[in-house]
Image 1 (spheres, rainbow, N blue to C red):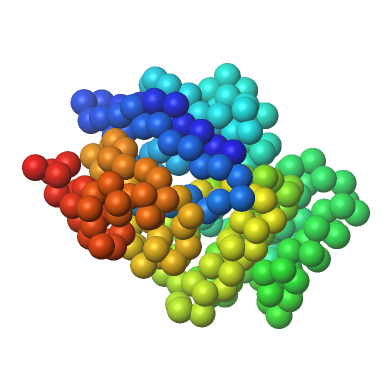
Image 2 (cartoon, helix red, strand yellow; image 1 turned 90 degrees about the horizontal axis):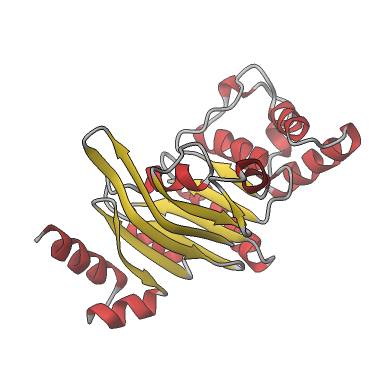
Length: 241
């Protein structure tokens, strides 16, 4: 489970995130939904310990991202926005290298790489250098790296950017499989259809603060809206008014 507790982050005179609290439970897909510049990526970077908050904390399975970042990080698989992969390594070598960074022994990381290559349908390009990969192939390789140490929690920052329809569908199936296996999945997006299709829980964020959170049904009911899209538009309009 991932929890944010009144996170705040400033960049000079700009407050990017202000007192953001959220909860992403196990066995659920939670979407962080907001317009561009809402503070989604900054929030996620504090959750996965790349940024230190100016105030507040985050808990990853009860481990503080501020006071015990190594323990928190060990329980996370992270797919950052625009995640790069090593172009001169093959997909398999990228996975093996990250397995070594996570402390897996040689036999364990070879077995895990083979498992992920099959799970993510990567066997066709597993042993090709990554330099010529399509966007979908790069994403699957980066996702395999994030999953190599079997984390209980997965954080993805706008994971479908630049993907074609078939790659998006494959990613959705994988995230649903992870949820059904009991994992906590948290991802950010500004695409309403993506959130509507995938999410059990939704956190709406704008101007660096949380406007609403709950199941899509709860958010529609509380805003008096007929759809999640209508609820989102109403919340954003209220925040900007």
